[in-house]
Length: 118
Image 1: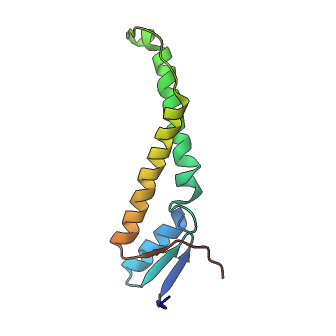
Image 2: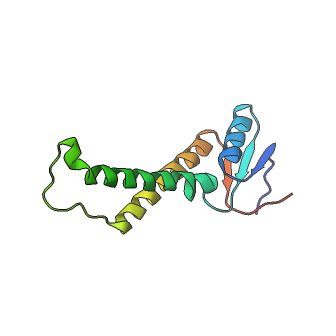
Image 3: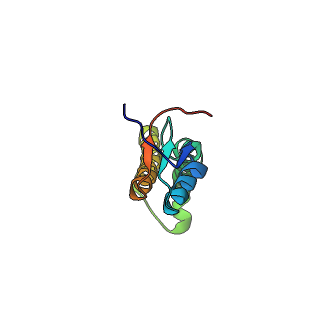
């Protein structure tokens, strides 16, 4: 494996890490971001963002149950497909995760898929 020199190596690709890496690259530093899991951290991949996607589904379901108060009529019952709901929340997270990867590439930051420590 060839050695590569970096001015800045950021450990962790969560919200603080990838933003810090982008700023370092914008300032002209050769930058790498080391992340062992998916870029975006816990919030984007497993916490805040997927939870908000699930909450949006729940809010929509609640509105549909109150449809008559909104002057809406739907023939038959509204059904809940848990697998589709989970799939949607994962799709939302994956799309945003891809956006973080794009930002790193756009700013010429090397993404190193590994664990790191000082």
